Length: 157
Image (cartoon, rainbow, N blue to C red):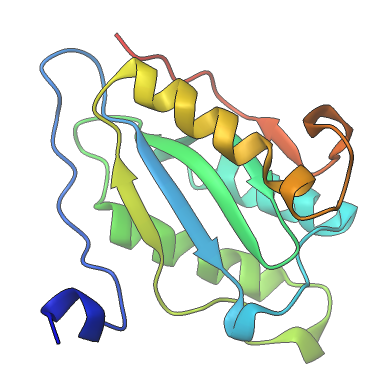
């Protein structure tokens, strides 16, 4: 069996600065035991508040599914903490503010990340992500899904 098939958690490579602009990372974070506890207005508001306060990285577009989140993010400065430290920070902040204590622990320990390489890849990933609720049978068209948005415009230069 190859190493990839045996791996239980993702390998998180360091985010590299592209030759122009800031890096953009595609991030997926899942709930503990894939519980469907995220797609609610109160949780969307909580996550938006936490991401805005965890401003060492900027959250761009996002889609909140019942049991996972897809988002695009970028460091806000050269002194930003590592992606791992930032994700750990906002997951902890969200957990401490979580309105239903019986839903603890909220998050899986790790996450999946991919650094985007081109603007075309960014557009393609966003198109895929925004159609997730449609593919899951949660709505008929991407714009019907209430649990999505954009906090910061992340541009590919």
